[in-house]
Length: 185
Image (tube, rainbow, N blue to C red):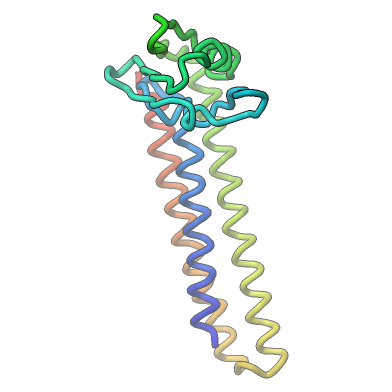
């Protein structure tokens, strides 16, 4: 009775870790990364649309992104969206492609990004702990209803705690790598 609950919790926690890792990909480092601008919303015929659905984004050089727009009439709108984003980018277009040079980060901006990484890591830890809390509640309910013995419920809670600790360690490792990447000059 407890195994499915533990597997379910582990699956949900893994999804939280994956979401956290994907979320960190949008934080700027010194290198160009297409994920930096993937999710920038562009007004496409009145509908906000993610940039990655309107163009192909590549990073041919460490400090340059190339945006190849599928619909050339949208180059102006995409340029404007890139310029007004919070990344501090200044795109340039030649009518066919948009070149987005990635400026080096200042020390102050790096520290802001490290704070953002720490904040997102804490949010991920809280999400994982919330999953643990919900699953422990399910185990307690099973125990009260007589579905499992009290000893088995305690063992299940211990297993849930170990799974939680493992997932939180993954979050911490991912956050530490990203912090080092951001602070790298």
